Image (cartoon, each protein chain N blue to C red):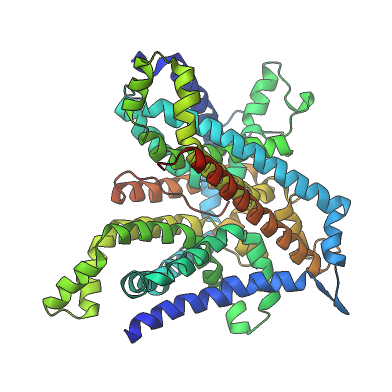
Length: 256
Length: 279
C-alpha cells in the first residue's frame, strides 16, 4: 500500500479533496429546500419546466447533425487524402489546427461579420452545425488520423480491389470496421461537447441546453446545482462510452 | 478518383468558406473604418478597459496552465509509479476524462454552489470561524477563476502527459541509480529533460484552452470581469458602446497571442531538440 510513497499519497489526497468537494457540495446544494429541509424539489421543478425538453432536444439534434457532418465531410476527405493525395496532408493539418488558433468567440465574431444572410441559413438553429463542425475538428481529426495511420490503407485497398471490390465496398467493409473505435470515440466526444456548448449558441441567440441552463442559473441557485449534476452525469455517460470503445484512452474535447 | 477529389475539395471548400474566410474578414474589419484604412481600432486595444482585459486573460491563462501542468504532472506521475495499484490508475484516468470535459456553464454553477458568496462550503467554513469573503477571497476574481479553471486544466494535463510518462523507461532510472544518482538528480538530469517537450506542448494546450474559454467565465461573472472573450461577446451582443470593428480588433489580438505562443513553443522545442539529437 505504501509503494506510492508519502509524496504520492499527499498529491492524490489533495487532488481528491479538490475534485470531490465541489461535486459533493453541489449535490448537497441541489437537494437543499431551504432551512434544514432536504429533498428532490429542485429536480422536480426542473423536470417540470416546459422549456427543458425543447432545449435538450435541440442540443441533441445539433450534436447528431454535427456527428453526421463529420462522417460525411471529414471522414471521406481524410480517407481519400491518405490514399491518393498524401501531399495534401500539410493543408489538412493546417485546417485542423486553425480552430485552436482562432478561439470560438473570435470565430463567431468573424462569422457574424461575414454572413448577414440568407435568413434560412443564419436564422435556423442548424446554422450552429457549421461552427460545431470546427469545434469538433481538431480532436476528431487527431483521432481519425491516428486510426488511419495505424492501417496500411494502400495495401488494404489493393487487396480489396484484387478481390474485385469497388471503392464503396472497400470503405464500407474494410476501412469503416477498422476505424470503428476511433470514429465512435470522437463521435461520443462530439456529442458531449455539443450538448454542453455555450459560446456560439449564446452569441448567436439560439436556446440550446447550455443557454437554458445559464438562464435558470442566474435566478434559481438550487436548480442550477441540479442542472450541473445532470450535466455531469451526461458527460460521465459519454466518457464511459469513449473509454470503453477507446480501450482506456481518455479523450479531450473543446468548448469551455 | 473523381469522387476522391470531390470529397477532398468539399472539405477544403467548407473550411475555406466558414473557417478561413471569417478569420480573414476579422483582419480586414479591424483595419477598415468608415473612410478607408485606419489603425484607430487596433490602437483602441491600448484603452484602459481592453488593456485590463488582455492582462486578466493572460494572467488567468498563464496561472491556470502552470497550475495544471504542475498538478497534472504530479498526479500522473504518482498513479503511474510501478507500484501503484491498478484500480487507482483506472479511477484517475476515467475521472480525468470526465472532469476535463466537464466545463463551461455546469462547472461554473458547481463552484457557485460550493464557494460562491452563499455557497455551502463558504457557509460551512464561516460556521467554523473562517470567513473567506471577509478575508479577501472571491470566486468572482482572477484568483477565483484560476481555481475554477484548474478543475478542467489539471485533468486535461493528466490525459496529455500520461503517454509521455509511460514512455520513460525504467532502465533509465535504474541506470541513474546504479551510477549513484539520487531521486532529485535523476529528475533534474534525466526525467525532466526527456519530458520537457511534452510538458511544454501540454502547457501550450492548457494556455490555449484557458485563453479561449468563455462559457465558464461568463456564467460565473455574467461578463463583469473583463476578459478578452467576455469583452468580445459584450461588443457582439451590443452590451457596450463599441463598434463591431473593436470586436474584430480584439479577436485579431487573441489570434496574434495564440500564434505568438505557438511560435514561441516551436522555438523552444527546437532549442530543446538541439540538446537531444536522438529525438
